[in-house]
Length: 238
Image (spheres, rainbow, N blue to C red):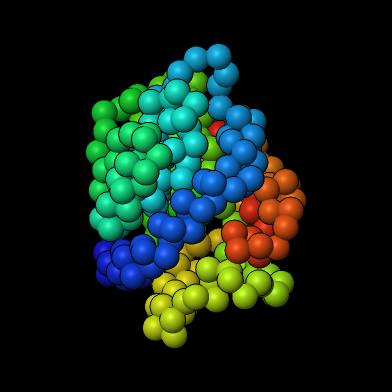
């Protein structure tokens, strides 16, 4: 699966410039508050947390949480995404720690974090069972995993998108690359989020919860940030 990881990295490297601006604009929109509300549903209250944002991209979740006073580390396999996150740090005057790292094999000491958060990351992992096992080891006892994603390979939406939507800006080569990646990962992933629940149980997590009503709360308008695939949130406790 190393070959598909290289393809994924190349794909996101080619999208960094526009993706970085899109996420900065999203941080300056009402989506920021909506996503903060979603995160607050699941994160412990009343204290600063040590949080790992896996698949941080250009740092969207990392910046939202750092602004709340949490200690945040964001990791991503794509070096140019991390460079984009660091550029955004300067613009926002917020400085989470950002590192280039494989989501399936994070290099941290066991029990380093109170929480792990992800957004649209697990759909790109060729070995999700192993990732969940490793992530559990990074959490302290009672720590929480908060995973937002969609069933992008089996739950396609045909909703029309606005002219300025990010998906409309993809080149023919980028669309072809995404299609090839999707075909490869569809072969190793199963229907979600039911598959996630089974994998999390196998990995030893407890108190696993699924919320399938994320999209109506976050994506109330069909705008340039709109995600046509229904999103879910799976949470689990170490």
